Length: 413
Image 1 (cartoon, rainbow, N blue to C red):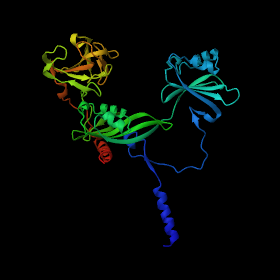
Image 2 (cartoon, rainbow, N blue to C red):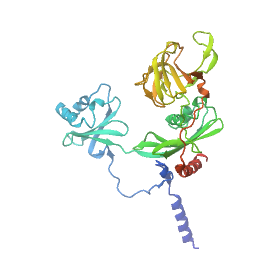
Image 3 (cartoon, rainbow, N blue to C red):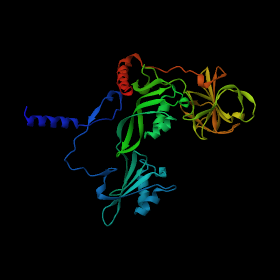
Image 4 (cartoon, rainbow, N blue to C red):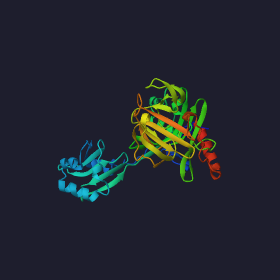
């Protein structure tokens, strides 16, 4: 083989090795292995930069944010729009966006004509990070609802816990809100108040970006949480048109009851038959678990049920009692206030906010007194074992097995 052939061969290998593969957009079980190949740089002219559907180069763009108490007139009149035009705009676009819903700190943008007149052509108000309303003053006065393009990226993060899950993620540069997602997913299987130093996690999840800017987590696809030496898998799977999480054996992670009614708190007093009361300084039974948390922390119903009481209850202060079935009832005491619509007789769903932590009644500090009753008798909430929900059915076992093999290949590396 001559020298020229060898050189051409080496060049071909280098060219192939230069192709970069990116794993992204794993948005459903049917697309778990979708791989996109990045295109080589194009020699074509770059398209004009667009902002809210407007070519930026043709306008002078000025941006600001809504101040508290500001109205649409306060914003548009100084920009050269008359009160009669503002009134016309409100009348014509009220069904698209009610201007009374302007919120403080939300961004807005002026697009002025790039000429000596500097006339306002467009005004854009950001309803949220994705949705916006664009008012057109270029010809006829009208408004349209727009949506910024969201790009989905799939990330894999792992870490070891030294103090708390939240701090572990924050120190590693991971969005700590991912901890809240894991707390929800494992709410039925892991006691997050008992997390130990050395526990580990590995998570595959989808994040959203707009114009290359990170805007938040969309969903978790799979995870492995190692707690006290045991591996807990959570694999997202679509069954009966509903996405839910299952373990590696096909069992549902959802249980009849949540593990705890609060997220990320600490236990300040446990179930006891002989506790020294912090106020009365006498020993007597404390048939509940106290969770110390800041005032205003949301309190969730640990299961579906009917509210039988939402009222002041002596030393308990503001208290909510939920009857889940003929066997189980739970109580939530010392609340600062009740959740929206919570009163005796209403039905609540698992995870619904039924109140907020406080120190009403006899209490030395803000906390939740949580009680669990079985057939009318108080039992230790930390020792209650709840039966699992519906597992993977027979029709889906084959496809779920394939999903398990795929995700474990990633999670167990």
